[in-house]
Length: 237
Image (tube, rainbow, N blue to C red; front, side):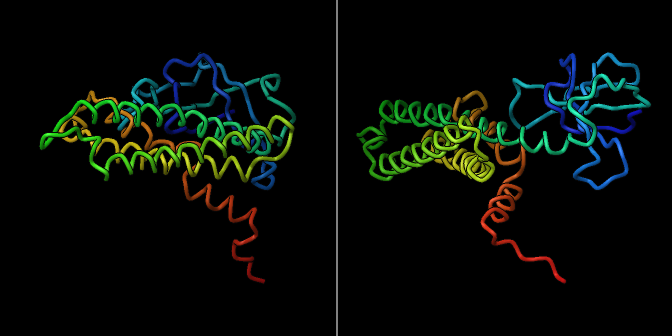
């Protein structure tokens, strides 16, 4: 039986099924969780109206409520207590995809900004002719290529079956921070046009902010990286 609620569930208003990580025993936190496939038309499940978000408006997000929801054991994924481990493995894929998904979007921000700055003229010359602008765009393009190299390396190792927790966490961290850096810089060069709601760079500015939150916040990524580097403070005896 499932009781309680889950916040900020992506696509929950339109989902037919959800994959739920739930406590199925009173054992230790890492071994008391199981993954369960839950049909959304199961009695006792209700969904809030879509939440109003800063960005990512193409994807609905809502709260899901469970009131004495009963799910048969045949809906369990894997064996009981293996849910936490499977979820941690899935996070590698999610975080790596999140980083890979950012690359073309950031390139589009820069390309559209270059096109605008070539057309927009101030003080008798194109905006792009200002060194502060074309140098900054060159720096950001270089950073995107660094992210691409990191994603490619992590993906290659993942395909080979290697543990890419460290690289996936680094890629996720870098993608979120670079997304903010690129979109903010590009928006600045659009001037007042960049502050308009329907401007593509303004949309990117809103949407990419989620990358540093969803799928594990930046602070979680830093904690994972530090743990794998062996730099976290040891437990007090």
